[in-house]
Image (cartoon, rainbow, N blue to C red; front, top):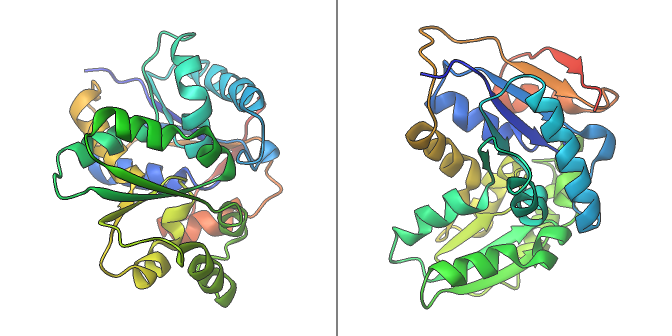
Length: 257
């Protein structure tokens, strides 16, 4: 048993969709979460900038003595994961590989859509990894740069959200599954399901949570631990959005990264 906490980071509130799934599966694990709200959004930044920001976030979490780090961010996973895995000894998990493992086990999924930030789509990481690991799969990518900022503002179920998602999804062919390649996007899942009623909507947070439960040395805690939530900039809408998502009030601390 390893009683050290799990470390997680994202550019903002999106990673809480991953946090929520992990807490549901392993509720007694302590999580230290860092939202780099000072540098949000990540999706429009260069690869080198994403790598440097990811390293700073990881260093912050390592100072908290975490046993593993979850990159709860699609952009940082697609552009920084391989780089940081070569630098740090701690296990680092992104959102892509656990999701691909799930798809590999579902033979019916051959036409896959991916929606994500501009940086993630331009990196082509999802398509490259899917096609390298799954034979005869078709991947259709779509960058959706407005969704993460809208999620940070809490605009996840208003008319603007409905119209924006309808516009982004209208040109997809018939799909068996659609990957939410940015961790902010599960906040829009109900709207997306309405627009694509016959398509499986894949929340990457669910796949990471199952991976952690199966592959990480869990603690022997008998009761829920008090998690720690840090933001690099507390002047944001994080608390309001997090309350709607988690259905509870959380204490926010300033993270000096």
